[in-house]
Length: 271
Image 1 (cartoon, one colour):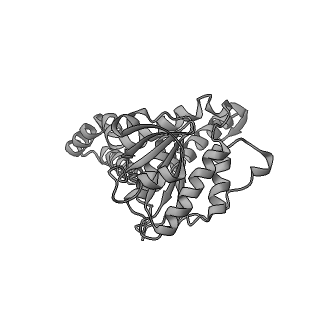
Image 2 (cartoon, helix red, strand yellow; image 1 turned 45 degrees about the vertical axis):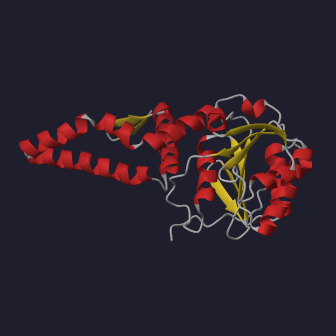
């Protein structure tokens, strides 16, 4: 024990302090850039105001603020519902055995997608392709148009042609098969996504925030190629960079392919 004034501070207290600091740090990282930060500051202000009112002896104000704080727990679940859902999804993915399962994307499947993306980028054909790694995405498949087709570049390009009924929405690929098309994805509510990105890119980020997926996006306006994973969007990829990222995320793990993420991060700052 180390005496600090009238306080005895030991190794157990030090460890407990470090754990609390670590939890607060990761909570801040989790909430940073979301509505939760502003809401947390509002709740903290009410708590401090209530403490000040209690010290000053304002009984009526104290009663009113305590009434607000009495339902604070319920308010937290209501206000932070999207953030809590995202956290639970993240915990569920991190505690699963998916990281011990081999990746299943074949070289031929990756090559077919690369060819389709190259052609669609040249013709500025908008596309949204979701690769379900360990997430089943069954809820999205059920409301889309179910398919069971081999991944083929011509088929992907045909699906995303503007004059086809299935072009609006996402294609979902699982286990080297196109399982569904015209699937509508959840839109990310992240306020830090730049205004230059439209609904297609926000949908890519939205599905990657809560699922273990890898998403490829082709911009209809510019033909720019982007990818989304783990809630992060990277834009302006070349075909070579896209192939590298797909092989790392979907292909067999090879030592020569384990390189750093070299694509330039998209500017996600508020305009």
